[in-house]
Length: 128
Ligand code: I3P
Image (tube, rainbow, N blue to C red; front, side, top):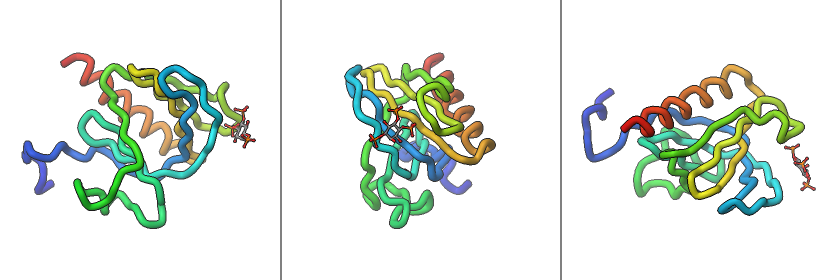
């Protein structure tokens, strides 16, 4: 891509629509509130955008659209978590600060791709 090699902006690795809920903040349990979110994996961050109608992966640019929140993947843990939901295809992401998120898709192949890509980033960062 034309942007590869531009050290001023980290490479966008993956972006798409997933269902998301935060289930813990700083180790403290939260009530589930599932909602669709655009999820963008860039550098070592997973960035969430709120409104799937007004946000899209191609609209993601620094300063152009405002993320709802961002997760630092360094030291994070990923695990399948179908026991934590009545939904299928659920995995849990836990950050070093004790924030926990469930991510879900109805599409098996899509959720497997996300799991693999995020796990790859976590492993890569840990080894640095
Ligand atoms: C929750 C809501 C969630 C559900 C959760 C319920 O009820 O139905 O979708 O999680 O189940 O408690 P409410 O809207 O009243 O808060 P899943 O869809 O992931 O099953 P849980 O309490 O068993 O986690």
